[in-house]
Amino acid sequence: MTRLPDFRLETYFSRWEFTARHHLTASDVQTMTLSELLALAEDKDRGAFENLSLGYTETFGDPALREVIAQSYEHADADDVICFAGAEEALYLAMNVLLDAGDHAVVVTPNYQAAETVPLALCEVTGVALDPDRDWALDLDIVAAAIRPNTRVVSVNFPNNPTGKVIDTADFTALAGLCDERGIHLFSDEVYRGLERDPARTLPQAADLSERALSLNVTSKSLGLPGLRIGWITCRDRTLRSRLERAKHYTTICNSAPSEVLARIALKARETILARNWALIAANLPAFEAFFAEFADDFEWQAPDGGCVAYPRYLGADGVEEFCTRLVEEAGVLLLPASIYRSELTATPADRFRIGIGRRNPEEGLTAFAEWMRARR
Ligand SMILES: Cc1ncc(COP(=O)(O)O)c(C=O)c1O
Image 1 (cartoon, rainbow, N blue to C red):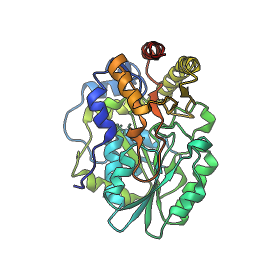
Image 2 (cartoon, rainbow, N blue to C red; image 1 turned 120 degrees about the vertical axis):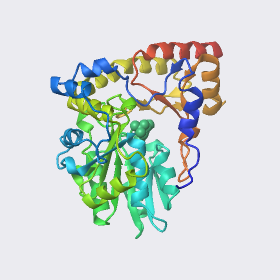
Image 3 (cartoon, rainbow, N blue to C red; image 1 turned 120 degrees about the horizontal axis):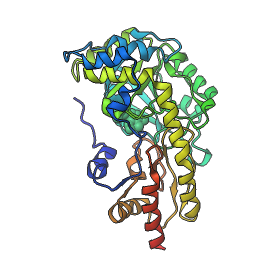
Image 4 (spheres, rainbow, N blue to C red; image 1 turned 180 degrees about the vertical axis):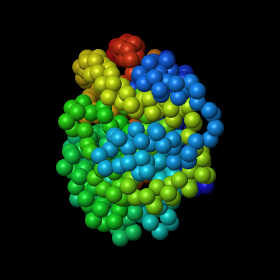
């Protein structure tokens, strides 16, 4: 077991996620109840859930679930999919399978912390920063320059947590091509896919673009079902998939059987759930626009290209760390300050905070936030 540093985001959430009055920084969309999800099920799947035997399931994941997952790709079938306990287990095991001491990885920043700390515990890693001054652009020349003869993985995440950036399809396709040319696995974290503000900007899935690329996904984010803990990797490299299965023997062995059936139901209803979640975000955005318009001297706001988090700038002289601490302590409004997204690999902006736009009724938290801001004037 490699030694890993504290996961700053989870440590912060351990303190505040369930105690702050207004969780205004959630990275998942409004969830639903079990009965709401079952109401979307075909009769036979509802029956399968009610009569499920609670034994072990296949390590790769329930075949019927993998079949439904595979249908969301153009060039994958059920045997190209392996399921995990959330995206986090998948990310952790994939990096452990792909990287050895002596290897090298390239990771885009800012990122979900595990995307860099897991590879950093295994080998040398070079960061490539999204550029905040150019609308979080990813410079492919910088990625190409970072690649070494021993680079095994290039790891990206679009829509990006925390910036909300979605790069152009042409750049993403070029990145997959570059990785292929150099014999590198593109590890593409696609957990926010399906929530692009302009659906025309939805990227292809990496596993469809390249036989050696890995597409990471989960029910947690765009579908708003994190409690299921069902994630997956789709990759057409069957040898790699089999190595991932062996690694899983040392962690969760198999998924939760009830969750596998529920995930199958959710994925069959994917278009309905995504449409609901997309509409919720679209309906929420005006409340955020109005808030940031009122406090235009204090913040620089930009709606995300996709996903359900944004990463605005805080302009106050006290700094975003103190600002977020006082806001949660005094007004009960939880945001994530920039230090949570600090990187060991590159400079990252120190004046931003993550705000979530995908939960129902953000007006309540925004009102508490606005009242606190007004009182400070
Ligand atoms: C980009 C990204 N990848 C992976 C994960 C992990 O997802 P899960 O909680 O479903 O394991 C998260 C969670 O916040 C995330 O934002």
